Image (cartoon, rainbow, N blue to C red; front, side, top):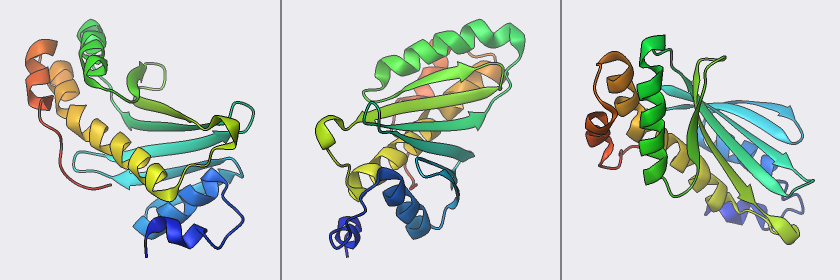
Length: 167
């Protein structure tokens, strides 16, 4: 049975309900924070990623935030920001940022569902998988810049190929 077939008989197509079902399906640890927000942990090859999805009915957007801890030395922050620019130039959907106060690397994406559009389970599953695969792909480059004292352009060479695995 496809992921979407479970929802064809249901009138409840709230995006966070779909995410909760996906989290159960993949056996991810999750916490339904509110009706419009869910947080979960997804195991990757390099890290366990904290993923939060939140639905905003006001602007009809499903927001995804995927984070992992990163505490680069302060002296390497200019290179980290330069690496972020290189990374974001290669990303078609979503973008990284660094939240220095929380010491978190963050991948963000907003899926706009204006006009009453509904995201299907496959679409949301792909959204989550893309976040994890993108974090996995660029994690080594961030580490090389922060701890290996590599130049951002050199570190990006390890991220040229797509990461393989599953979310």
